[in-house]
Image 1 (cartoon, helix red, strand yellow):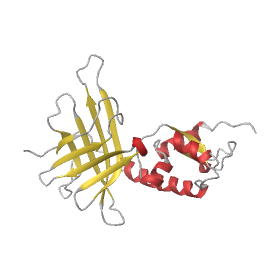
Image 2 (tube, helix red, strand yellow):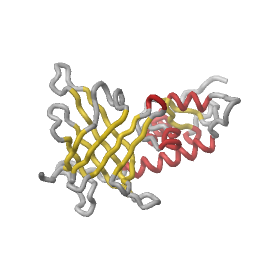
Image 3 (cartoon, one colour):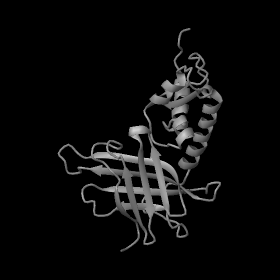
Image 4 (cartoon, one colour):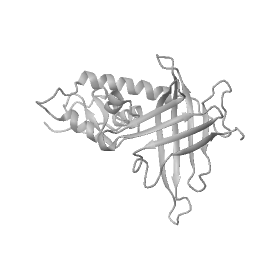
Length: 227
């Protein structure tokens, strides 16, 4: 049967609702990183272009979802639809938070929210922002984390820039961990908050995650705090 193109308004709705996050990555690993991917037909009928039948999937999970394997149980359409619903709810919470332009406003009662600037980074600057979200079911503090980092700001052709985005929880040790990828491509970012208002970022297997030589590793201080 001839494949029908997805209507532009439907395509836009899927991309905006997902913010180009793969719902299977999110459902299985809570991976909220920006992905390259495609819009998949969940019932595998490429003529059924109803928005309810479409989901944005990374290339890896799109291929895996469409494949037929006799060796293991493939993901079901019900699972993927539930992952999609969970992702949409999470994104809706994160992207409906109030955005402050100009001076950063940090609620004094929240010890973590705000903007953090990497210390001593010189030309390789980096910033990370934490926006509070409702606490998790377990009562842990949840935040939407976004950031950018530069490498080689004074190069003739400009710097390389990387971005960081995910939703995370701060545990009882004042740490937050973000895991993306698997196998040899598995990368781990750990954010540790100290009582003096500094933030320490450590990364494992970070090379190539954000762009050549770009990393978020280092010590940060929250904007508005003095030494």
